[in-house]
Length: 373
Image 1: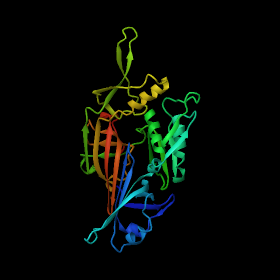
Image 2: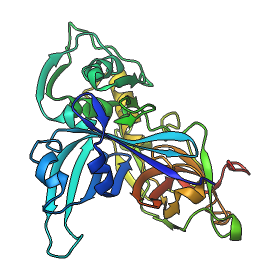
Image 3: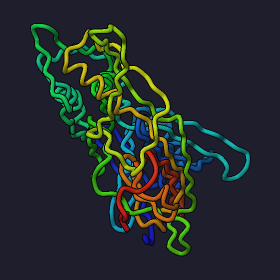
Image 4: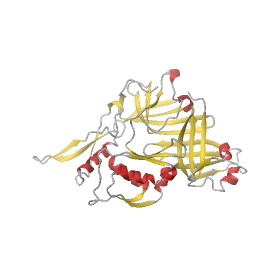
């Protein structure tokens, strides 16, 4: 169990510095949301007044103008966790006649916003997908972004005599379109040190060392404030490929197996897919492109079991991070086991640090008989 939380806030341009003491003294709350499949964001709330340094000096001087860079980190149990590396997009001043009720709210998004501001034009002859993704991410090395692009399951290099891949979009749109083609995702992971980020382009990471288990319904051993689960029987879809039988000329739908290389199962009994959907636009593709298309579609199979909860970081003992694995114990045989952390919202206030989180997996039952302590 952690005993205290220390908040670190840095503000500046490309290079940041510790926030002025006047800002730290006026800071009321910090909220950071990290979610798989969407851009991360943050919100800082400051107490202000007519005579405060913030309204009379810092705000007029442009310290909090977009796109000022903001880095938020916390120190829990001696370990530093970078929650956000982003830029300010807006701020809102709410004056009030009630003493102490005037606030300044600063809102922003992570550094992927900088990748989505300008349309770029480039060509990438004879380059596989992960090389193109690496070259795009390298443009943001000035902000401490380190590319981490994973080669595709089915390697493919376009023949420059037949086709040259061309980018005519923002960098973020191009990275996401590359991912759509092969079933990959793209996002930034802030840290491990303040001012650095990992630019990840690859499959959803559902392997690796799980985070300490979330314990419920176990008396004094509980480390979460609340945790509930739901099952959606219509969430999963069976994808098929339509082929024509050469003798009878009849069309047959052939099921496409889920490729666990990109999305390994987390449950002992995956939910049955009740929906059926054909994979279209395969006839005009090469064999490798058709295989990549099938991998891309099947990797998006939705998770049937989801969970929502809330925890106190000091009681949990560390920061729960999104886009990783975590164990659950005490919920019963059907819902115990490993889950993928879909999203986490950090809420930091003076004397309190709580997290709201969302979990997901493909079905019922734990694969193993133990979860991380």
